[in-house]
Amino acid sequence: MNVINDMQIEIRVDDLRGPEIAQLLETHLAHMRAISPPESVHALDLDKLRKPDITFWTVWRGNELVGCGALRELDPYHGEIKSMHTTADARGLGIGRKMVEHILTTARERGYTRLSLETGATEDFIAARTLYQSFGFVPCPPFGDYFEDPFSTHMTLKLEKAS
Image 1 (cartoon, one colour):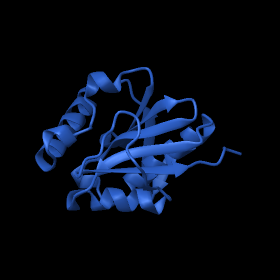
Image 2 (cartoon, rainbow, N blue to C red):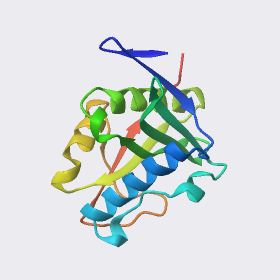
Image 3 (cartoon, rainbow, N blue to C red):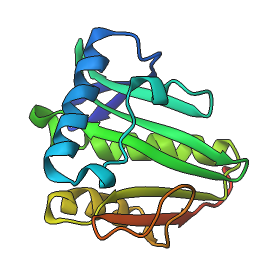
């Protein structure tokens, strides 16, 4: 159990079959589509998140789903943060920070030497970019299947091995 300002949360691996996560991801996708052009929406749907190279976690405050995040293996040394989302009611409580910490720990345990991500480049994504920068992520060129896009920011972090 994790604690944020006396609030207990649980981060757990999710099989993406519950109605709560289906609703949260649909809300996330709808939000991304509302603030980004279609070709710049890189959020994954349920089927794509169920691929074996992706580990998906949900964040719970009691019985309430408050966030999610995923780690995709690009190769044995390089991972990608995917599907980070916090519910509107839980934003500003540190849920996203705890999820990034959890993903970073897992990436180090897996022996990844680099962790990368794609997020938006517009004003709507300032909080996300600021969060990632606070962990040391820096801008990088597109990686994997990504391409240069004025609506996308690509970031990366060199990882030290877990001790």
